[in-house]
Amino acid sequence: MLALLAANNICASLDVAGAAFNVTECPEECIAFAGSIASEDFLECRIGGSATLVGIPDGDAIVPAGYQTLYVLTRGQGLVIQQVNTQPVFTVTQLGLYRIHTLVYDPATLDLSIVQFGTTTGFDVNGLLIQGGGSICASLDVTGAPHLVVGPLLCFLLDPIFGVTPVDPQTLTASNGTRVDDKMLRAVEQDLPMAITSIYPNPAVDQLNIEVSLDLDVQVEISILNAVGQEVLVPGTMQPGVGNSRMTIDVAGLPAGSYMVRMTLGEGVITERFTKLN
Image (cartoon, rainbow, N blue to C red; front, top):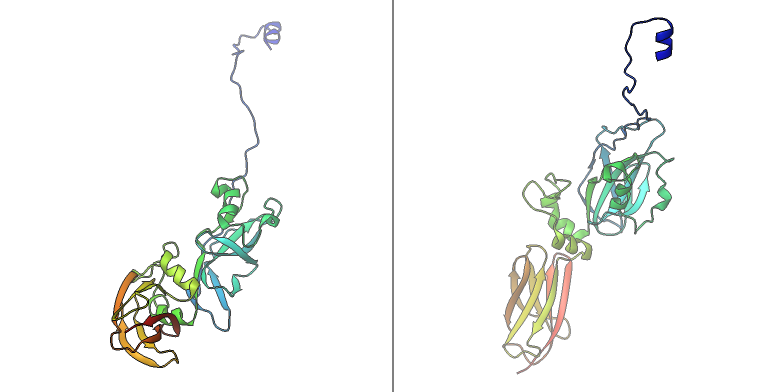
């Protein structure tokens, strides 16, 4: 260039060092967006051994060309993947907490054959995506649409709480402040929110102590049955509250023999045997 200028007697100036540039291909922006989805009903009662869960997409998803939409069903706080479907409708048989998630993905970049039902979690999949710190362009609605599947007894007890009021999908808290915590979830999965943890002294002479554990603040009916199943003592209805409690029953008036403590909550019944001495 300098030689050309000199040969043509041109007055000019050239910055020989100049400025260096690196030209690279810019990565495409990941615009996939799963949007949000709501539960048709948060509280689902298992009838005939199964319950149907339905999610309602809000219609705000972004599905780029070549991408697909899949709905993922997870169970529990760990978001363990149970099923997938092209529609947000699932049938389940187990009691517990479920969520329906929306997944927008490119089959060419996200291989879903890695998913093992009952083992792989929604967190595992999210970790592969850009939104979760991975490298794959896809979108998963991690919160999803929650559903609490309960048996007939807890359906009766919880419907006035969760069946008529909105529930926050992240905190699982109803508008009246009641929250689905670990204790309630354990009660749902066991289909009975109470247990007799200890009964003493056994044999008993005059006083019988019953230690119970309740996961819900409910009323419990207590009765004493003899060896042939007849009610011989009805202490009444008690509401000890959530947690561990002790109740004392006067059994001094019972003849010596074998008896059974029966605690009833709706259709749920638990029993424990004890011996009465004179």
